[in-house]
Image (tube, rainbow, N blue to C red; front, side, top):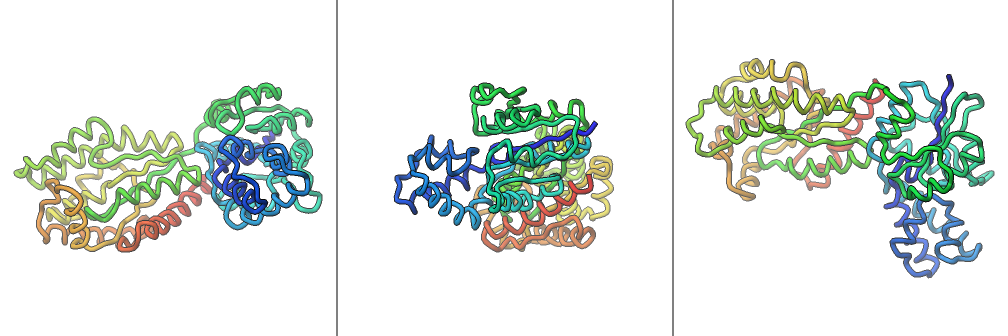
Length: 427
């Protein structure tokens, strides 16, 4: 059976208020109108711009046309990328494509801008057709847009949107309609418009359209570096970048990440345990990791989300294999049953000398047991990391950690996102 689903864009696939609101403010300034308040700005997401400027800001038709021109001047340069894909949308689209659905977009946003947004976020491969006002016909009526976004032949079709315009347009065309509760319209608005179904979350939408479908796999990422290299800052920046693209990020850390592993962590890092042998330390790290892999990492990947881990097996190889001089191969052998083939899709390595990283770390807070080691220990750790990178250059994303946090974050995010999108393309 040929199934088709047509999505609205703003408020349904992407959370676009940041760019829309900034452009509405820009247009108001250009037209000499007072800055709209938050309640007025919220109403701009979804309806056609001409309608919104006239209805919500009291502009005449001529003023509204000029305001739309000012809005689009900024939007086409900057505003359309001030956007975020809703969490779960990537999983939804991957699931629909797997299940053989035809997927389209019907939006009041100009078609070229819509296409640029979808392309920018690496989602173009999922859509069969995108329809919006094209500057020629300039049609923006929702029923007309939906009708032209649909395939010629289908047995079942749904319109999915967050505002009454989407529901009314879908009903006018004669297809099923579903209102989403995570967008900009209220449940009351959508039900009053006559939606056939209402879902509060993207997960509920997946279950409605593809009940019982197998979830696409997620991904595993790790971030590595010497103590003081800036991992905490970069984890925050990378998480924000991935969130903007709609990747659902779950944080974890090693040693730790789950109750049993956290108890082992407290033993490893306790400054009173200065008599711990190198072998004991390595085995404790591996034991913590074995629990973490099975209780946290693998389940998150199976759920379709992205696990971002602060340190993983590379840290054991660098600190125990290099720093403690147990040897790289020996530590890899110790960790083989713990890891059991579970390796990151990408490992961000923050590249900085051990002297600079330790200077930063000791300036921030009191050192733990590992950080109390001498310069020669940390020099061996740095060298072990470099050996690991040379062994597996395809997995590591090496970033110069002496640059500004923003520059480091942009470089790391660009490569990680490229790999995640490529992984999606392979299933």
